[in-house]
Image 1 (cartoon, rainbow, N blue to C red):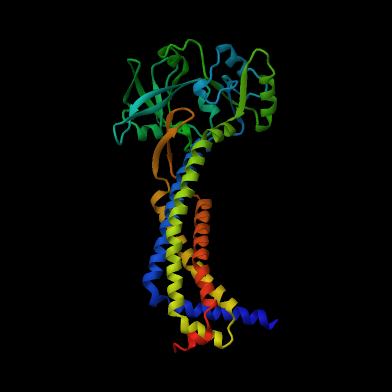
Image 2: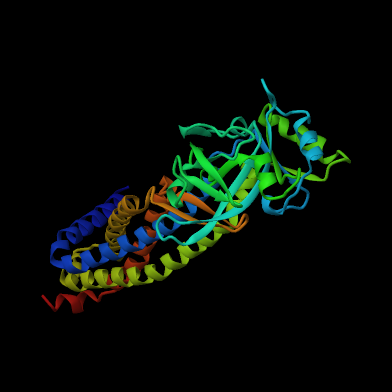
Amino acid sequence: MNRPLNWFSQIVSITQFGLLSLPQRRGAVAATLAGVAGVVAVFIGVLSIGAGFRQAMTSAADPATAIILRSGASSEMVSGLGHDDTRLVADAPGVARGPQGPLASAELFVIIELPKSSSGKEANVPLRGVGPAAMQVRKGLKIIQGRMFEPGKNEVIVGVGAEREFAGLNLGDQLNVRHDHWPVVGIFSADGAAAESEVWTDASILQAAFNRGDSYQSVYAKLESPAAFSSFRDSLTSNPSLNVQVSRLSDFFAGQSETMTTLITTLGYSIAFLMALGAVFGALNTMYSAVAARTREIATLRALGFGSGAVVVSLLLESLGLALVGGVVGGLLAYALFNNFEASTMNWQSMSQVAFAFKVTPALLVRGILWAAVIGLVGGFFPAIRAARLPVAAALREL
């Protein structure tokens, strides 16, 4: 029983000696802290792009909302539905109903080019034609300035992300579409969802402006409950008059964000790995200098009966502690610099811009600190082994 206690007390004693010697090594210690903090800050910063994009694509996706596309379509851009198709969807069992009828919105999705507010460079902006039930179908969508467009009129409402990112989309501005002037009569928010990057108008108006006849590309349907999805889907896919695919909106948008988030995550880990190599060398330098400065101290402790295992563990703890401090500093720095930083990027599924905000989530902070811990353990391992193998007699001759 005394041996484990004695071993732990040895670790505590050696670790205390190491911490007391930090001021003598403040240059190397500061370099290690800065290196680890830089790695963690960049790692979290890059991954916060993917987290923000994923949240924009999925935050307002209600499991009780379904999206219906033509069978085989990978996105709304390549889908196509006729008027009769949309009517059959709206009348399907499981669709919730409001005072005005089924809560289903047959929609048309086109791309227009608008200059960015920051650079003036033109980019693709989604212009969506929606049905009367569109505001009720989507979760968290509300008008925050102005009013809703009037059906049958050349009027648009604009998401807050599109208003921020693109010129000419402020309340009261005129949007020029196919030689027509469409006034911006309202600004809407959608709990940070991708819809905030879009411009909306009446579907029938958009059909006429783009010569789309009576065609649509998707139907968004609010279901009576999430449990109604299976029967709703089966009733549509088994209908011989329809050739459609049915997805929960949450699953659809998760798939839409997968390519971008995978790319960003891979890039983030690649950059972090390369930077971590430099941070590991910094930690190695710090711990080797600690061993060199404490050769006599370690030899004396060994001569007094301190075990080599206690020396290894204490030096690893010191290296781990320094790395964790650097990791916490890097995490705080990433949160201050990147969280809620507003940007936009291309959604390759729809070939349009999506405005979103970087998100430094608790999970990313934990991941960054774990990354710092790995750097600390790797950087402290070899110096700790060297310290444990120091010949006691040779080291004592330096006294």
